Image (cartoon, rainbow, N blue to C red; front, top):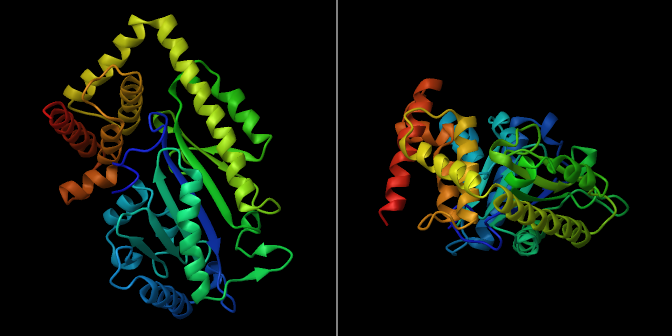
Length: 345
């Protein structure tokens, strides 16, 4: 089970809902200036706390020390949204705890000592919060967090001080993008303390018309208020996306249908696919699935294809550090095989 292959509410548009909490441990330097020995102590402290709570249980956490992972394995973790790029940059001192169903991860010694993350399929913000809040309470019961009675949780970056909470909804918005409504939508959410980022968060591109909408404010409002603000705004956005899709279908009709079927045809037969073309075609396929054009193809299948076609996943499959042309070839081959398997079900 993971957010990738499980069905979630409104998953035709909402890929996932994520909650992240930033925490630090008292009496230790923050990760940007921490020594290796102290960093290892923090990893051991987190592990001991989790082992006491989850030993032999269904929610047991596996420990991955980043320095022990290959570059390809690190890339795969980022592509699956289980870890951040910044965690990989701290490989000498960082670690990742992953629970069995890959819905909860704990990054240790990234920008902060501890970053807990809960991610669920579809539109399930409060459910993700409730899940992660329980884990946070367990960890906080074992460790002494840096906390100020006036400011809240103290973090490396001042923008995370307070609740330390970042909530995000990953949405597929092709119709709003195609009809050029996406810019005013994003301008509007910025006025209520939200921001939009690309597929892999800050500094990344909105490949395949996929946007991550998240809160900017962590100090002042409660966790519930932050999540509710994002929930209400996200619901309005995906309702507008559905309206835009219906309008496109009404106005374009057979022209839109032709574009979407051609996307499926290209994915089914292409011999070379670079990442941008692949994500663009996949966006069209997801739109077609959402509109009910492709019987037998599920949204979860499209999610699988998206992860399957990322560079790290392809290198992992080939057990080789492929170059750009080899990746394009391997991507096309893997996608062809996956689509055949889906159609043969």
